[in-house]
Image 1 (cartoon, rainbow, N blue to C red):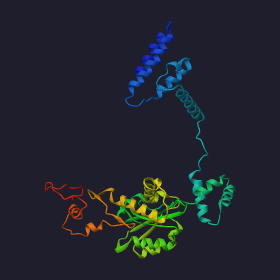
Image 2: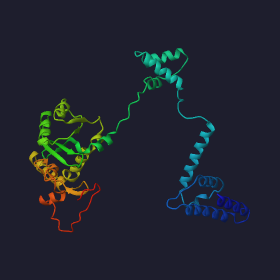
Image 3: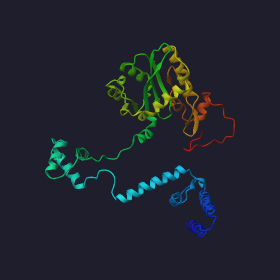
Image 4: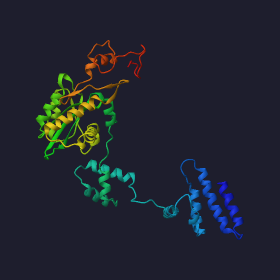
Length: 363
């Protein structure tokens, strides 16, 4: 600020000389140089810099020729913004409709709670008898008291806490070469993004969906929660049937695809990486294509298991094998030894020391 005052004083002292145009030009260029040197990474203009150029625009007609840091349109925008702020300050009032006082809002809530049969117009009429003018919109806003709900975990927190026992299910359509519409049903795990089961059909029904769920959960391999949308193909009694299996059915809200984001993301992946590059000939052809893609998706995709990078075991006939087979082996063997025995990893030939993961277990 002192440098700016010094520049202004030196300019006022030299403006009476014959070369006042050159002095003003030097002033403008020096000011812009000072702003450029003051800013480290990105150009940062302060309010006093904007005010300086507004004054220059009023006093010096040729100010556009010496403006380098910003465009002239920017200075004009500053002027219009200052004009609006000035008249907002002069008006001395807030924009919009004035808010109701707390007493009137409490009166509206009390009248609505004590007279349940009264509508908005009846309450407005009673307020007019008391000399209180309130719009119908304000009455509708305050007639119902908002009940405070106890705090609960968010949907994101629920998915993170129960990711290991959550499956997501969804359907998507595929068009064949002969313009036949095929429906693909799939189940995917939240914990490892592993596709558990899929099937293709031309006419999905509730009975067919239930049979696919039974085939996806053999040998008591079942999730704790099943997330799906509100499509009628799931049937009205899916929740009761799944509860008999020990699975809690969770329906996503209406028009909320992000609630089932894992399934939606897999649909996007299979379309972008596979189905957008070819045209299925028939239902059998599409099943063969998806079987190969699911085998690649589950088998060749690196996933962090514990602290080690493992490969998920294969998917045969549309159903992926569970990693629980590793834990069902000899409990005295480490994970790497089990994988070496299954020929999923080469035999260990290095030093006897093992790498330790974040959880303290060897990898």
